[in-house]
Image (cartoon, rainbow, N blue to C red):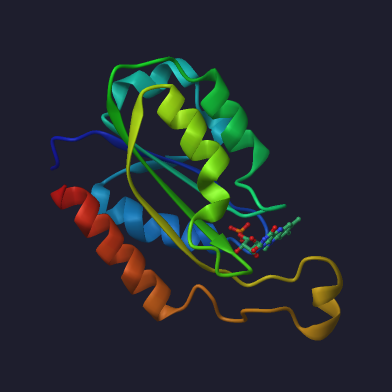
Length: 153
Ligand SMILES: Cc1cc2nc3c(=O)[nH]c(=O)nc-3n(C[C@H](O)[C@H](O)[C@H](O)COP(=O)(O)O)c2cc1C
């Protein structure tokens, strides 16, 4: 059993792409997974590590995650990480709003992860979608390595 108590707050609805990544990370960190709705901002104080995961919708993490960050209590220093799946390779640039909100509450962002996810949003559904099969084995392996690095940090 790990000494560190971890939680992942996840919003994944389009094709459960981000959920696949969350499951891999949660297994390594022995973290429980909850949706923003299932979390009371006060209870987050019990955790020493908090992960935030979401698909990218309109160039940002889901609004329910951003709203939760707004409600979170100011703390001195705690660790957090952010991960996402998106249609386009975005190299964590769409994490900016959440990153800033968390930092302003005293969180240290130890690492961030993004990979492509299957997307059938809007007109794409007529063409079979884009990024079929993503996240793939390699994306999951990279997520595993990401979690392993967090564990060692
Ligand atoms: C309403 C909507 C808006 C989206 N906006 C973006 C976007 O701005 N940039 C992007 O790269 N992908 C965008 N996507 C694609 C999703 O980020 C991608 O499919 C992601 O893997 C979905 O994650 P999920 O299955 O965990 O919900 C959008 C998808 C939907 C449904």
